[in-house]
Image 1 (cartoon, rainbow over the protein chains, first blue to last red):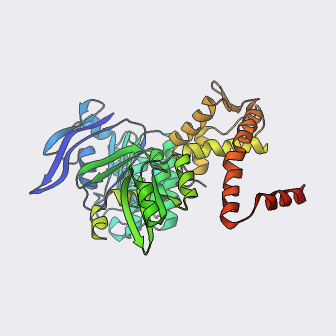
Image 2: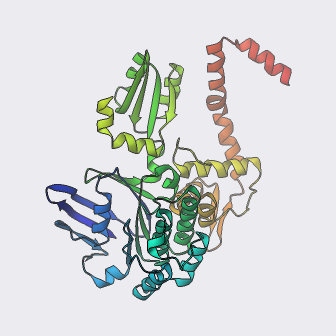
Image 3: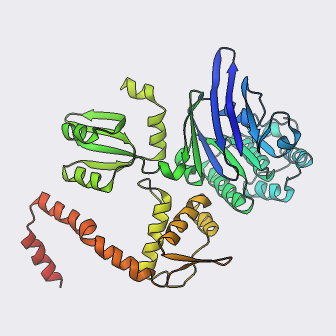
Length: 291
Length: 117
């Protein structure tokens, strides 16, 4: 179990993470979603004990994680900066990871480099954005750490490399189950891999649920304005759009099949709301207000 | 493969039921393991497991400890009976609604059905 208890992180006057309480059972793949500046990286830095919270604690299996050697050996945190020497060759970076990590699988690391077609003789400074991300993914996966945290590690990867990454992540998780936390903006293409989703918004946890429970949770109702409004009574409205006499409302919550049938009889049409759209609606009050 | 209209575990369960109804999965035949299923369809294994658990709960699949999951011998019959019960409400009613909207009478529909006999 990984627990955050009242974690607050401040940068001067800015509160990046605001009194977060979060309990994450181990052995699952989590997706952390949030807009730019929502506090994703700060939250992950605290989870990985890279940063001591200004207030609150992070517990891993009941013990305080910060500066705890045992917890740190079994935690890998791959972030944007990669934390490598620019002058090192990729091969050296992997060797260092092997010395530091009891769970490191050197053979698997080489296999991953081969899959992603990255030459291990390259220097870190000579890597493209996408190649840097590949090195991050290799460091993250081959560490086989019980707590694996990957912060937007797909940045700069093309569609093929991202597909390979998701495939490898799932395959390796199936053969070596562990806790994986992945932050991303690209919700649709990776959501099927997440058992649970955590959405952070302005430093607070907006939602923490099974990914599958979010599918079919939102629905868009379109039709003559008056009938749509009447149908929506009693539902939470996430968004709305009007064009002439036609109105489209995005509703939160699952509708009963009978409700949908009655609506369709009244001439309304229903569309599913994808995870990406649900996320956009839940985290974009300003967008809604400005319409 | 999967859509956003409903939870994936329900879509998995429906897909397997369709395979049983169509005969591509036979009585007492072993189904994929949840891990094989997850790897094949690129989904989280817990989601796949939930879909299979639902089918075990409904009696469509049965478990053999340490070996895997199999199609219940009475699954095709039970599934067919359940689908037949829902056929008029779920498949035919929408057709009649559409016919009503575009002004096709019940007589026209029966005439059409007669010609298909």
